[in-house]
Structures are given as structure tokens and as C-alpha cells.
Length: 258
Length: 258
DNA sequence: CCCTCGTCTTGATTCACATCAAGGTATGAC
DNA sequence: GTCATACCTTGATGTGAATCAAGACGAGGG
Image (tube, rainbow over all chains, first blue to last red; front, top):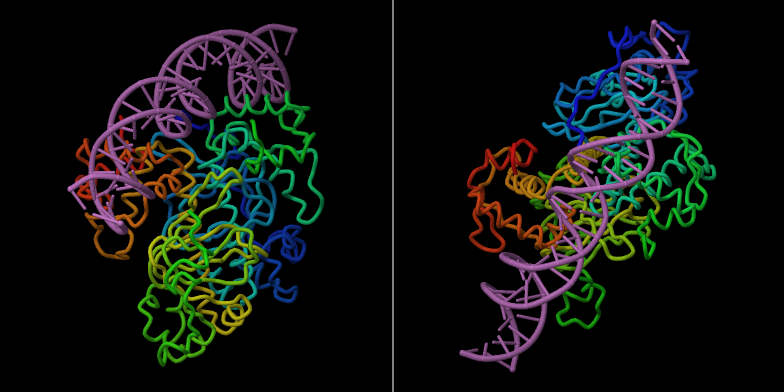
């Protein structure tokens, strides 16, 4: 398994995230935020954006930097405005389980606990807004619509988590990878048709730790899906879905053989 | 496994759940509800209990009866007032993953979706309150404290789900069972000291489907924990924890051998 | 009491995936 | 260009848990 130490990124970028007070990058950052329509912030009216902006702190993280550490005091909530992050938990010997990937519009830190229950790390360059807990709570008190939206978000994440438990507890390697590919192809287009071409932001190691497998098994399973003409692999970070119906059946555990 | 829906089983109790309009079993059912302190209903003041009672429908289910079916229209929310239920998802070929067990005070149905994303079944005799979605939403609108409480609940469930993903994706059989036993020993006593004696409401099959294993592996692992003097098994449904510190270390993946 | 049925335990064997090991490929530094 | 470094792929082998197969135990019924 993956017991070896994971390396950080070297260079000045590791000396801390770039921080901007919300006021420091334009007249009204929230008004121009392209993540707002996709995020819980959409619950707040245009007229109240000043208030929202006043409690948000904009931050940027380089690939590999972590911005939530499991066990640390849970001081902040986060809202991803760009890039992709991985959320994960570790066992003492280094075994890692990635519990999810967060993208533009995702809200992190819902768990009401003294400390964070997971860690979060930037995969590519991540942009986010940070909210201190007290300020977030006062925001919630003032904007019931925000709370409603958060509740809906939490419900959706709960459903996704149950789906992932089914995957981890009961699906084969082939079914797991097929599930991931189907999900990724559906993902960013909220209502649009599923994509045929997928760009993998994450590495094979990330995929393995997300699906509860090893990189070798991921690699072999990719190869097998390709030789079965279900997918194409034009480059290492790209997947083309060639036979979506069959891939979807495999993902749902609905395929006689394997 | 599917005993429910059978008309003509003997005894009136099996002809569907017993239903009481909230008003039909006493002057103020919510005021006397022993689940209220442990549930989201605690967010509602004594003075507003009439309102709460007016939207709740009390129901009872016999062992094996299901009250949520995955894929059915999600018309209701549920609040367990007594007994234990299993929540699960199925694959077409019958593979089952139990995503959790619900007890007194647990709230079900948070996911905001047209249809239920999981099924729920009574293990022993289950008592619950049922809320129709529209009525629940109007209740939420009138009692912001209720919404806050639901959000907190959802956050906790999300944390539990992440913990379970770690278990299913990365822990060994021994670690999984140890984790379950530690959790069960902590469970009902919210702040009280952990129990030494655990009563298993669920069968070996339930445990297996919860931990992503088979009954044979569960049985062997129980035996092994017993021969290692970590637990005692006075009867088939009882477990006594003999060496909690070591069991907890195993559960956390913190034990050199196995 | 014995018999049945459902559940649990134990043993023998198999298998899917992990581990160990080697080589291939892409990228950036120099 | 060469070299170094990640990262990925493929092959050989090992192993933890699944599967297959008996039995054992306990509760309930006749």
C-alpha cells in the first residue's frame, strides 16, 4: 500500500498561501465571482453581496499544498472558487482514503466538530474563499436561504457518500473504475449532456486511493477497459468514453461477466 | 429477506404498519416522546409541540418490514423514536451494502432528491414519526432552530460516512470489526463512559454487509479476537470487550502485526 | 423427546487484488 | 542533446478474504 511519505512541492509557493482580504482585489469580488452561481453563495442576493464579501477571505493554493489538516482545530469553512482539491483521511501507517474531490462551488467544513475530520490538499492551483466560523454563523443567522442551501448541499453529499460506500464495500475493481468514469463524464455539466472526453486532474495514485485500490490495479483496469473497446486513452490524463451504455451497466454492477 | 408487503400473514400487525394520527394516542404525543431529547425535535419549544405533533404520523414496523425503498418517490421524512433500522443499497445481482444503522433520535431522508437513494428496514420492532415533505418544509420555515439542528445532524453523518469510507477502502477485516465494536461500545451513551458489554441487535449477515465482508469472515474474525483475549462472546448476540485499549488501537489501524 | 430450520462456525480451496519487481515514457533542468 | 525524476505500465508471485462445503448450535413445533 502507500506507506511512503508524500512529497510536498518545493519553492516559494510552499511558504504559505497567497492571501487577499476581500476588499483588496476589486470593488466587489463576490459580484464578479464566477463560482457564485454554482455555490451556496447564490443564496445571497446581489444587494447583500457587500456583507458576504466582508466575511470572505480569498486564498490561492499551489498544487500539493494542504489547507485543511485532519485533527487541527476547525476554525474555518471554505468555498472552492476554482481548481480541484482532494479530501482524504489517513491511517497511522500511511494508508490513505480519498473521500472526495472538490471543485468550483463546493463547500467544505460542514462537520460540526472541534477539529477537522479530514484533510484537504490542492491538486492543481486552487482558489477559494475562507470564512471564519463565528462570521459564518452570523451570516447563517442573517440569511436563512443560505442555511437552506447548505442543508441541501449536505443532503447531496450524504447521498454521494452512500453511493461511495456501496462502491468501496461491494464493487469489483472494474466496476469501481467504470463508476468513476461515468461520474466524471456527468459531472461539471449540471444539466448538459454527459461528456465523452474526460480530463483527469488527478493522478493514478489519487484514483487508487479514492477507489480503495492500488495504482497497479488502476493501470491494469484502464488497460482492460481499453482493450475491451469501452474507452480510449489518447493521453495519460485523458479518457474517451467509446461505449457509454455498456460502461454504465458495468458501473451499476449490471453485467453478467466482467 | 423480504417479508414485508405480505398480506395474509397472521396477526393484524403485519398487515402494514400500525398508523396513528398524532392526535389519536393521547393529548400530546410529542410532549411525552422519550426520543425527543435525542432528536431534532428537541429544537422545538414545549409551547410549539402541538404544531409539531400535528404534522407527525406515528408508525410501527415489525422486524424485516421495510419503510423506505430505494428508487421510490421520496415523499416522507422519518424520525426514529425506538428500535433499530438498517439502511442499505443493493446492486442488481443482490450484493448489499449497509450504509448505517439508525436508532432512537435519528432523522432519515435528508437527501434532497425526487427519489430515495437507499432502502430502510426494521431490524427489531421500530417506532417512528413520519413527516410529509411539504409539511416538514413549512415546519422548517417556521422553526429556524430545527433547520440548524438538521444541518448539524447532516454534518455529523457526513463525518461518520467519511470514517466508514476509510474503513471500507483501507482497513483489514480485523480492523473493520474492531472499529465496529468500539463504535457500538461508545454509542448510546452520549457522554457516559463506553460500555463493556455490547448487545448486537443485528445478525452476522448485517455486520458483514455493513463492513463490506462475508459472514464467514465475520465469524472467523470474531473467533480470532476471542482467542486473542480482546473480547469475550458469552452468547451469540453479546460481546464483552476485555482489552479496550488494544482493540481501539487495532480499530485505528495502529497495531504492528495483526 | 426428536425433528426442522435458520444461523453461526470451521475447514478446504479459489480468486481478485496486493505486493514485489522491472522497464517504459514524459517532462524539465542543465 | 543527456540526465534525473516522477509517473505509469506490465509481469511474476503472494495473500487476505471469498467461495465452496460440511457441521454445530439453538429455538420453536409437533
